[in-house]
Image (cartoon, rainbow, N blue to C red):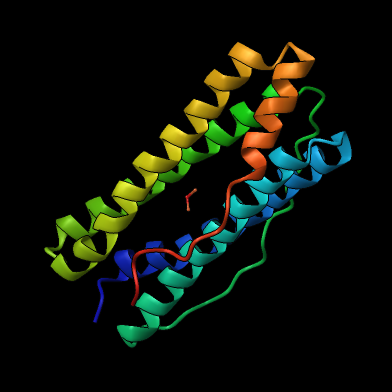
Length: 170
Ligand code: FEO
């Protein structure tokens, strides 16, 4: 039996992760329309990873015999006029998700819910990687984005990203 607040936050995270997938699909769509297929691919893979994250929270609650409540997924409503703004919005979003994971961890810590803390350990590490990826992308764009040939090469690099299933299996 999970603590009420821990249960609420874990359930809420299902929605937050599906929203993340939705947000990155929107980013992918933006870059597809721009003709930057590599960037579109990069965010498409990111969206797939976010869907996996949502399912991990979903499965964890089910495994713990806790109820799952699915809420409406919010509409990604930002309108972008510059490529860099999309990348920066991605980093900002990941920092927000890190804060959410930390909040759940803190709630689990408070009630000595060691099993949930152990489950969340994977996400703590994952968020570090997500922030690094988002930061790296911004750095590369700052360095190469203003030169068409370099942007073309960066786009090709991002086209090579492939989806891999999460290393955490429940
Ligand atoms: Fe599921 Fe990008 O955090």
